[in-house]
Length: 267
Image (cartoon, rainbow, N blue to C red; front, side, top):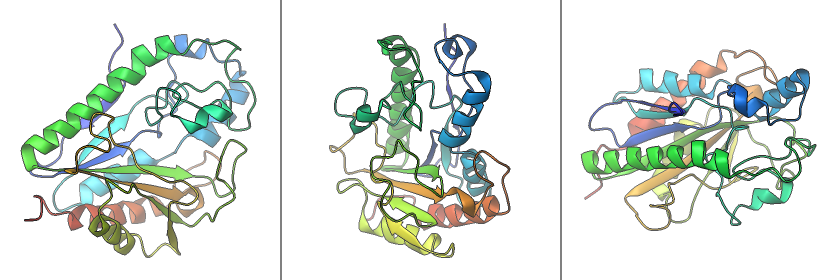
């Protein structure tokens, strides 16, 4: 029996906000590590590049500072185990570079797992339970408040990595990822206001879109979503280095966004 790979940190009962932190961990279970081709030093460097380091700290700082504490859904395993934000099938465009729900290539497009690797056991063991857990967390917010507002907390490197399919675009200090169905204008405007003090922001560059559980995706307008992508030099030493004072500043900005979300749907 596998222990749960994520934590749900309770917020205020009337808060509709769910801070989702999918890529902050470097933890890889030993049996999963055995299926990865990289030597320990190579794996450490890959984790430096691929991990959204300290984003869980940013979310925690926001939760502590917000007027109404948001809920948090935090992945406790590395995205090199499974990436919970990928489509688990051929809809996923990152399959083109070996980075679907289970990665077979590194950020520099080198082999990560053996040719012919079967992702199904990792999907069954980690991806599916995570998706079920996230959908349940959204359902709880809907039941409690009549809406759910998912705010994804991510980061990205200052310079593009070879795996990026759209790395040629602008790389502002803060990128806001949106979805035509799930990102209402008021939520985007609130994010622009909250994150306006970091030297520039843009929408859907270099990363676009949001995460919504598939059972709600494109179907339920009560579920709103926005992705916050923070360029790593804003708050840490790259790659994989220590956090700086930007963590607290970003946490305060994220708290301001949380506080701009009303507790109940607009009439």
